[in-house]
Length: 334
Image (cartoon, rainbow, N blue to C red; front, side, top):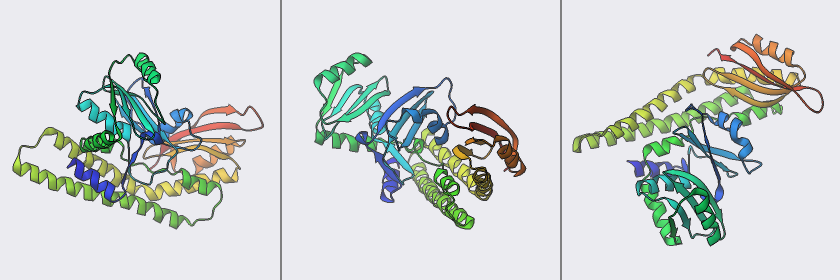
């Protein structure tokens, strides 16, 4: 089922692999485990990106968030970092330490105690660099793979991918930043077209998820007839069903979301303010703007009737020029 799902996603361009040489990796520990969204990750970790324009892919596990920054754009629903694919494979095979792939360019991973510590790529990795990494991370073993061995190990690692690994990087969130920019820059697009476009996007996700559930159901019936179902398979199916239900709820809220965004955009444009950050979810509204008309904007947002318990969370005066940076927070009435 795992390799079939992977091939299904690849066949319809729904899945891509983010190569080591196309990304920058970093990881951070959290004080406590919490749910992360892409907006939250960008807000807290964007400053660590080596790229001026970039996208970010992340995974949260055991109170540690792993981040892959890239300046490459992907249109697929799932983007699997190559180093994450290898990590799960090497963990299963009890391999850790320095892992060097003699490809062009060469790729290097540092794995210790089942955790990816470092990844990078360069034309040639020198022996002294490997020695320094061994001292830095206190590891002894090193494993070197030729070009042919790299391709063989990658194929084996892909076969080892679980449904959970795929779902960890499944993008169920829509990035509305481009849509907001359209409003702010006063590009004239009828609201009906925007709503229709968003409904199509979510409809495509909805259709794909439904077909995936049908495939899982078929596999479930086959396994049930031939052998006893393991708890792992049941958990995987329940996980997909939960995400399926969440998507249906988000689908219903689209119209109200667009209407509220339209109202906010008009208010910001009328006040000649600038968006710095905007989050609209099922139950939370949070916005950061640069303006010199804080009171007027706050009052108009309250009067839209879309939000409750609104408050100005913080204001920071600009060091140069007039105005201030303001964060407004509240609850969504949907």
